Amino acid sequence: MLDAGVKFDSERIDLESLEDDQDEELRAALRISHEQFFGKKSALFPTPSCSPPAQYKRKRNRPERIILPDEDTDDDHNSLYSYPYPTPPKKKPATAHQYGSPPHSGNSFGQSGSATSNKNSRYLPEGPINFDQLLRQGQNSAAPTSDEIEGDISESKESVRIAVGPDREIRTLLKNHVWNRPYFREPRSGLNHFTLKDDNIWELNHPELAKLDLADFQFLAEYLAEGEFGLRYPEGPEQTKEVIAQCVSTWEMGDKLGMYDLLEHIVEKVQYFEWDNTDVLIFAVIVYRTPDQPTPAHESMRDWLSGYLAQHFWTYIRDDTIGPLFRQRLKAIPDLERQVFEKRTAMLVSGAELDEDGESDGDGL
Image (cartoon, rainbow, N blue to C red):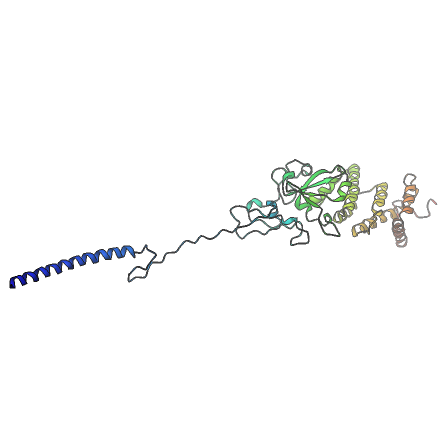
C-alpha cells in the first residue's frame, strides 16, 4: 500500500513536472503569439514594453490648389490682370477674361501683372526694327518696345486688330501700345472701343478710324508704338517738305481721334524745321477750324502759327500768289485774324524785327 502511494506520488510529481514543462511551452507560445499580435508593426494596441513606443511620421498628402476656369478662357489675360502666385503651378491654369470688364473696375487698361514664368518674360529686342513689318498683317515681327511676339503677330493674343479706312482694312499693333490710351474709350460712358472676336483677339473699332486715310495711318500707328513718327532728321529741302506733310496729315488724324499727346508731340516737332509760307497758312487754317474747345496743344500750335504769320505779315500781303488767300482766310477765321493782329501789335510795340527784309508796315501801301 505504501509502495502504491509512493508510486502514485511520483507519478503525480512527474505529471506536475510535465504539466510545468507544458505550461512553460504554452506560455512561450502565448508570449510569441502575443508579441506577434501586439508587435511594433501593429497600430491597434501599444507594444507591452518598458520603452516608449516608436513614433512614425505619417505622410500627408496636401491637396493641390484647384483653380476653376470661367466660361471664357484666354491665357494672354493672365499677364494682364491677374497677379502671379507665390510659386507658379506646374501647369498653367486657364484664367478668366477679366480684361473684358469695364475700364472703371479693378485694373485700368494696359496694367500688366509681372509673370513669374520665364515663358512670359519680356525684354528689349536687339537691332533696328522695320516698322512696316509691324503694320502688315501676316508678317512675323517684333514690337519696337519691351515686348516680343513669336510667330504671326496678327494671330497673337498679345495683339489688337485695327480696322482702318472706309474699306475697314486690318492693321495690327501690340495690345500694350493701344490698350491704355484714354482716347480709345467713349468719353461719356467710359466704355472702350475694343471688341472681342471669335478667335479671342481684340479689335479696335473707333468710329473715326473709318475716316482715316490708310496710307497716312502708318504715322499714327508708329507714334502709338514708338512715341515718334516719320522722318526724325530730314536732310535737304525735299525731306523737310516731306516731314511737314507728315506733320500736317498726322495732326488731322490725331485731332479726329482726340490724341492730344500726339498733338503736343507735333507742336514740339514743327518748330525745328524751316517752313514754306504757303504750308504755314494751310496748316493754320487746319488748326484754327477745330469746332471744339481748343486744347492746350491747339493753343500752343495757334500761338506758334499766329506768331509766324504776324512776323511775315507783309510778305503774305504783297505775294500775288498767296496774298489773296491770306486775306480771305483772315476774314473767314476771326480767331486767326485776332491773334495775328495781337501778335503784330506786340511786335510793333516792342520794336522786334518784323520781317527778314526789315520792312515796315508803311512800305508798299
